[in-house]
Length: 120
Image (cartoon, rainbow, N blue to C red; front, side, top):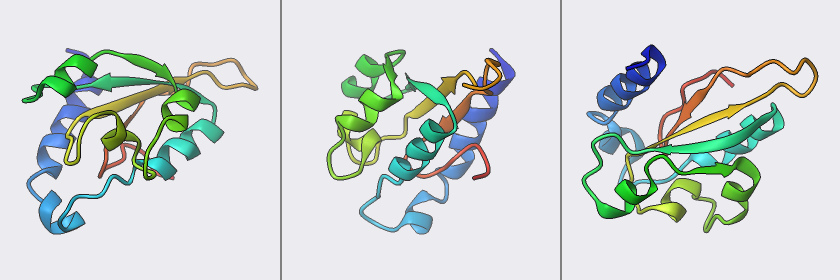
C-alpha cells in the first residue's frame, strides 16, 4: 500500500478515538470550507475512499471520482460528505489536481468530515 494511503488511514484511525469529544454530538460535517479552499488552490478532483466501510452506501461510493465543482454543487446543508453518504460517515475524500500556473501535479490531500490532512 502506498505510504500516503497508509498515513491517511492511520490518521483517521487515531482521530476517531476522540471524535465524539472533539466535535460533540450530533457529528457535524466540516468539509465544505476545506474543499472550497482546495478548489481555489487548483485542486480539481475528489475520489471517495471507504477503507473498511461497514455500510452499503459507503462501499458503493468507494473509488468513485467527481470533479470537485460538481461534488460541491450537489451538496445539502453545507455538508458535502454527509450529503453523499450519511451522518457520521468515516470515509475519506482524496483530493487531487494540477497547478494551473506551473502545470505540476499538486500533492494529494485527504479530507474527511472532521480532520484535514494539510495546513490552511
